Each structure stands twice: as structure tokens, then as C-alpha cells.
Length: 167
Length: 204
Image (cartoon, rainbow over all chains, first blue to last red; front, side, top):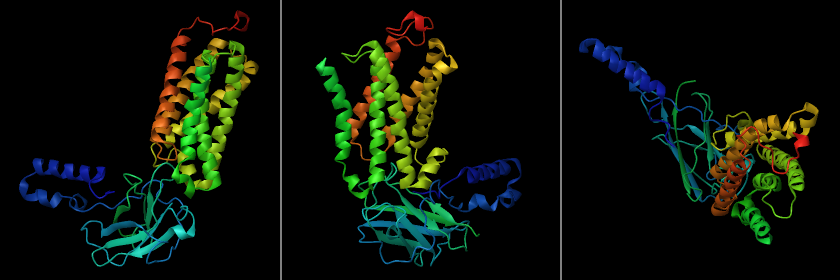
């Protein structure tokens, strides 16, 4: 699930700057480019993302018996720099428990490239969609909850990407 | 006659039986399972409604068909309440999202809208005499709501990835739509001056 790409705001900003370039002389137009238009927009919390969230899930080697991989990246809004050592919480309805149960929750840290990867039990469809939940809530950056949906319930991995902005 | 009833039993029974064989049930609690099946049963009841009021079920007089239509309507309310309450118990935040039209799942608003339409129809139907609604007025209210209930339920059901088996689910949905379209055409519900099949003029 990439929510990184282009949102309406960055598109409008980019469009506005293109307009400005056309109207003004090319010499000054570069200065009028808003910083956001060039930068990476922060990831918005997805609707339903925080459902059945439990604060402070422990960092674990693996959730339960594993068999399914949740992975993704954490980057900084604007310049897109990878963020190392960030704590990402993960939970889902799996073959080993329901979403709200403690054993369905775990956390992991990003490596030096801002990547994270946590093994967990197989996610199964619940409430009509096979989906997982992820949270960044450590406070340094603005809290974000994601709720990626699997293309098929048969898949054995799922990705989610965070672009965080300062809190 | 036996064929029609057998076909009806299959149309409703096969999807329920197929869902009962779903491997997903192994990872669900009893209340969640009950909620899911209440939803499937509700869709089965939605199929019965046009068949009963259209008089397509052999052996039932128009009067008894209409009485059954009323009772099945009540049962539909009960099934929907069990469905919603069971899901609420299973995951309150997901159900609150759905009921407030804030859910990420595309099927939720269809189901919730159908639910409200069912409640409104049931409420008005039980108050119809007290409100003094004439048949024509009643049909003018009931028909659009019936369309909302049928379309809402069918879209809701088709978009869900759950315990229902795809083919039997699609077949049930097609039958619900077909029965609804047929009864609307047969009773010519958009015409103003027509009586219901078997309706006595005294009740007009």
C-alpha cells in the first residue's frame, strides 16, 4: 500500500508553481516553488487504522509462531530520509488470535535504511477484508495509523510505508 | 409446486451450508460466527419477501402470503439486530466506524443503509393502521425503501470477503435481484391505480 505518491495538496502546489513559472520570468520562478511541492508528503492515518490498537505493544523477535511477513519503510517527510530505530507496532486478526487480543500485537524497530520486517502469524479476513494494522506512536513524529489490505487472503506478506512529519 | 419450494430451500440452504464449511470459522469466536450467519439468513429472508408478496410460492393464498411477508419482515429486523450486535461485540471500533459511515470497508455503508431502510419499513408497517396510511401511500413509501434494502443488501454481501462461498453467494444475490424486479414488474408498482394481487377493494 503506497500512500507516498501524490496527494491532492502536493498536486495543487505543484500545479500552482507550474502556473507561476509560466506567468513570471523564469529567473525568479524557482524561488516561488513551495518546499512541499518538491518534498515527500507525510502519510495520513488511514480510516479504521487505529481500531483495536493497544498502547505499548512490546518489541518482539516474532509475533506468535510466524509464517507471514509484515514489512515496510519509515521515512521523513520532505527530504525522504530513511529513519532508523523507529518503533512500529503491528497487529491483525491471525490464525493465532483476534485483533484485540494481546498475543496478536507486537512491535519492531527500523534498521539503518529505515526498513522494518516482522514475522507474524498468517493474517485472515476479518470484518470483510484481509488486512493488517500498523502504528507509529513514539511521539517524536506525528502519530500515524495504517490499515493496509491484502490483495488476496492467500498472500503471505503485506507492506506498509510511513512518511512521518515532526510532531 | 414441490420444485419451487425445493429450489427456494436450495437457494437459501446451499449458501448457509457452504458458509458453514468455511475454514475461516476455525479462527472466529462463537458470537462473531453467529453474527455472520445472521447476516446470511437475513439475505435469505430478503429473497423470501418479494416471493411472498408476489404470490409466487405455490400453496400460499394471497392473504397468507401477505401475512408471512409481515412476519418475515419482523424476522429480518431480528436477524439484522443479531448481525449488528454480534459484530459490535466482536470489534466495537469497527462497528462504530460502520454505523457512522466512517468505515474503510466499501461494503459497510451499503449494509448500514439497508439496515436503516429495513428498520423504517418495519416501523411504518407496524404503525400503518395507527397512522392511517392508505395502501397507495404505503406502497409509495415501501417501494423505494424495498429497492434500497435489496440493492444495499446485495452490494454489501458481494463486496465482503468472508465465510460465504463465492458462487452460492452470487447465485443468492442474483435470485434476490430477479425476484425483486419480477414482483415490481408484475405488480406494476409505479402505476398509481392498481390494486395488489388479491387485495380487496374495501381495504383500499
